[in-house]
Amino acid sequence: MILSNDGIQQAIDAGDLAITPEPSPRRPSENQPSCPYDTCSVNLRLGTHISIPKKGRPITLDLRRGRVGAFLSELYETIPLDPNGGYALQPNTFILGQTLERVHLPIREARPCYAARIEGRSSFARIGLLVHFTAPTIHAGFEGTIALEMINLAEYPISLFPGMEICQLIIEQVSTTPFANPSDFQSQSTPTGR
Image (tube, rainbow, N blue to C red; front, top):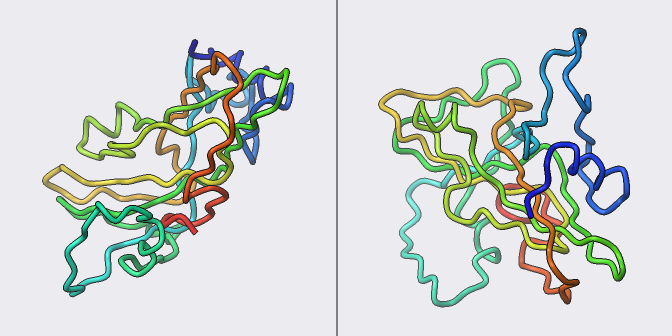
């Protein structure tokens, strides 16, 4: 079952889901016409750093070895996003970003349990920006910022700025309480998962 915008806010209010900083306002108003909530998702913002591939690394990735998180920081250079000038993501270029918000989907006995999916926004997809396009599942028990795999498929650069609403989080209720199985990226706070 996918939660509505009101259901997401109720889960936050009950402590069964945490998004920090918490999205607000709950509903659009005359003084604040924009709202981070859509009918069944909440928009998350791009964080303050991105990771770009290091150039000239003579390496072939063998994904059969697993534990990809262990060597991502060797493949990428993490840089701050300029709040004024942004970052011009060039055509056919892949980078890692992260959400400004930290998300926690706690697993607790006798309480509702949630998992989530992270998806790009349709307005950005229509100009050629793919955001988080291969691994949308945020498992129950996860805590941390969410890494964003981004690529520009357009014929022109796309400017990225910290704080822009870059993606949407869709929350789903898990039918029974799962056992914990933390990933390599548990408690991550950088685009490369550290």
